[in-house]
Length: 165
Image 1 (cartoon, rainbow, N blue to C red):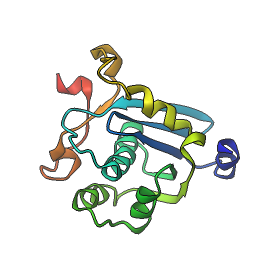
Image 2: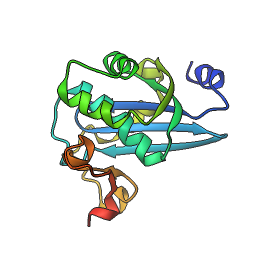
Image 3: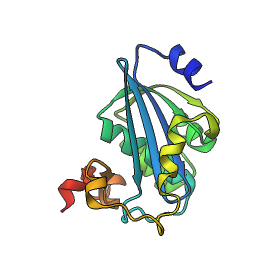
């Protein structure tokens, strides 16, 4: 099923995004015949337990990591799907993330079941963060950002982990 959806969208970048609980997020980008993956624990500055905020934030962080602006989006959370389609939410914090996404050209937003989402396994890499602590070398390319940068409170931008140290 994943590949059938992918081939329907061929020719334009397609981003699969997923979040697993509050542990981490994952994304897969199909673009120009190439596949790129991102799996990362949430940075300590992201301190929300609201899955809808995390799902929307995962999309924003993936677009910043991959540097894409025009793409098809496939998510495994219907609340995030509807919020992104409408460009608004009942949640103040989700609206702050959506404001950061207004410059993006999201061509279509589609739903996929978690079991069929290629990014779901990447997001679950950090389900048991107490048992496996990532090493600094493992997170060099992972996206990290402060609440100020992500929620527009300071006008900052997302940073790579290597920029924080």
